[in-house]
Length: 102
Image 1 (cartoon, rainbow, N blue to C red):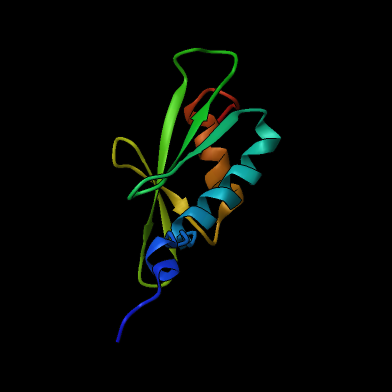
Image 2 (cartoon, helix red, strand yellow):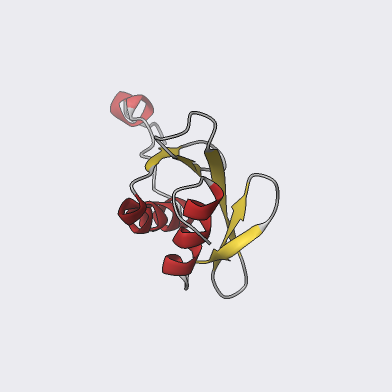
């Protein structure tokens, strides 16, 4: 069966991944700490968190699927929290970039 020319010209639409959604929610929680966040898309999206008061205070946070939820992982492999504890996770990330006290 022949397909129409229009069917070949259509670009597939990109559906946001679950990981991207959880990273977006984490970015929302981080807003209270006055840090900058940038969602970087790719095969494995990540959230780049920057403390505007320090040019060197940058952390990339990854999101990984787990059996029951999603885990947030620092760029150096340390578990920061889960999608079920966004407030606690946001505090840890803010601490990593020096935006809050322990």
